[in-house]
Amino acid sequence: MTFGRCFFMKKILPLLLCILFVFAGCSDKTDTDSVTIKDSVVEEYVGEGTKTVLRALVKSNAFLVEEVFVKNHLPVDAQKAVTNENGTFAPVVSDKIHSYEDLKNTVYSTYTNEIADKLLNEKRYVEIDGKLYFDMKFDEKSDYTTDWTDFEAEFTSSGEDTYSIEITAKNEKGRKTVINAAAVTVDGSIRLDNIYS
Image 1: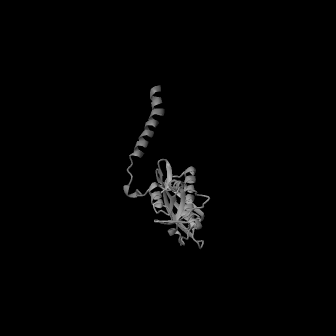
Image 2: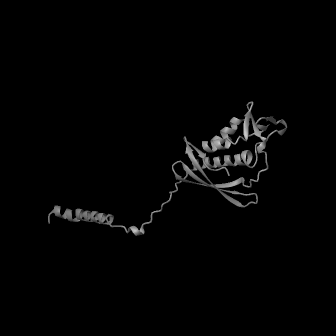
Image 3: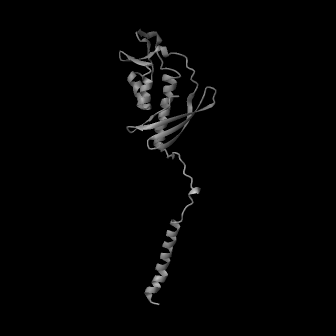
């Protein structure tokens, strides 16, 4: 036996057999009945930076719900209320929101434009002579019971620029309540899309 044949038998033949086994394994048909394809959205990892932004948005929503629009309204000086053809308006005396521009910035930096427009179009707050006023017709006792003081939130992403948020808060009796929300990325910034509970 020559050197060439010996080399072929020891080196090339085992290599060819390995290649043959690989191709045989790849061509093995899979029983399609045993394969289950889920028709659902794959959840993607949400990074810590994004979670921090989402938590800040949920906190901003909590502030707007509890202190501005739903449970309470911004503090006012009812003694200095003015009345015109549109109603009675009291000047806002808040240390957090000083002007209508401050209010708009807070709302638009928290929600998508559609949600923010809807919220501001309620006209609970108006600008009179460059100052922020509250429409006193909205000064009624609220039956809102969710307490946002110590909430927890879990975040998932169901695709690029879309986030689901599950918030666990408490009601006035201390029982847990779950609020589902969503956020989207608009022009490079994340905004809440359907929360305001």
